Image (cartoon, rainbow, N blue to C red; front, side, top):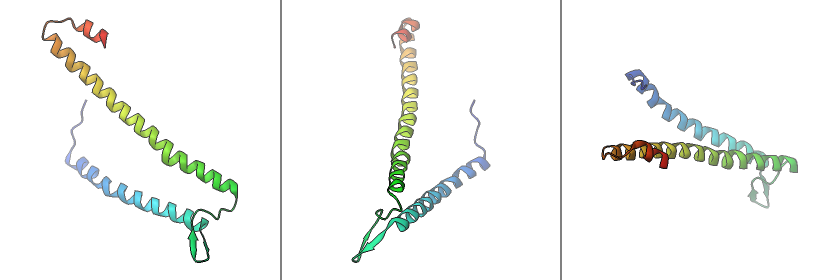
Length: 115
């Protein structure tokens, strides 16, 4: 059952966009500044980022966490969401095909059992 959006609900939905945009920018800046400032070193006037880790274990843990959170989680999210979209499209296509064929006098059960 669909719930119609009221005026107050639409107003709150419109205000979520800028908040999520600001949180994304602020969060990424704070995250990168914390990591880059703590692991950067200047040698002979050249700044090298991500090289001055307190231990090798910290660098490996950071690399694994970065790979998992910024690559694997995103791939899983895209796969899940687009998979759901494709399932809905397939279900709708089957329903449309079945309704057009049923209007032509063909048995609906035979069509659904083939797909």
